[in-house]
Image (cartoon, rainbow over all chains, first blue to last red; front, side, top):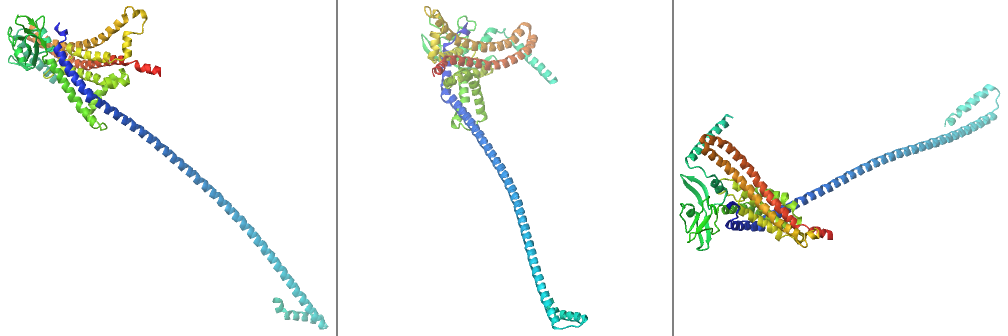
Length: 167
Length: 360
């Protein structure tokens, strides 16, 4: 049947047409499209990879930052605690020192008072002695008959010596 | 619903008038009607106005053994009355047993022979239409890509890219070793889109489309031949060794080279199957649509206009369905041809890389 017999003329036209298209497209068609698309795909995947790496790096930086912040906070707390301790210690020290000083001062004062007391006592004693000796001297100098006159005389002497005693 | 019912009735009445008109003429010659439309032709028949055919006349180029080259418009031979010749040529009728519908030459002795026919026929026109379309479709995209490969692709580039990579990633890359893809992808892509566009253009029923290009054996023969060359001529040493000295027991190949002969024949049957598959599928689709069309006029001629137009409703629905199916077939056949071609090419390219791997 005619339908199943190839026509040489049509085959020649087909060969010409098909080969022209094939040559043109193989030369300037498909390689350009494929090349550009694969190039672009490469570019996109490279960019995605770079973005991923950048993201990872960023995450690392973030983590480092947080770590640093945490370290700083710990340091801060430590310093605060230390200073509080130091303060307490200082206060304690100051308090003890003050107490010691006060005790020392009190003791000193007591010692001084005692000393002054003793001195005063001694002075008084000395005064009393001098007075007694004076009185006795006067008594001895005057011979007194009665007792009344004697006591009056003692009082007189005492009166005479009043300013002296007060001083 | 009411509206669509009215449309159907209108359609019915419309076909009634056509069938009634067809009935007036002599009954339809179904065979010449179908093969006239699915086969090749010397002119592009568009329609008929008042009995006069409206055609696009294509050039007839023939070489006669006696009178040499002739080149004239097909108008001269198409409009000949029976018994007349133009420069000694005439187109044999579809009923002619030897060369139905072909240009024949009457020699001086009255002998009817077929000259060497290089006429730019309907199918040749269809081929160059598709070729021109492919170049116009793909080259601007390629130029854009060449100019700026990193640019954001336009919608048109996206379409080209999608089509190209559908074939490249779906058919070619899985079948061919990766290093050989750049070598064979251009051929396979061109084949795919050539067949696909030919199939689709063949389904569009008006000028300048409608040529049944891929449903013609000459075209599929050339395509299969190209695949044959790509497989066997560009095949590697390992492939040829497998054909001429396959890994089978010695008695199968030594005194009588049984296996080599089988292998050699199989290299021929593969492209042969490709050729027949594409040709038969597309031709069958066209014939079914033509038969459904002819059915209206056959029934109309046999049982009157009423039944004919009743048939027309069914026929038209069937034709719509078949045309939709043919759109699918257009893609599938292009896909199958390309896939099998790439598998055959891939098989002829394998082996060397494996050997290298084994050595290293």
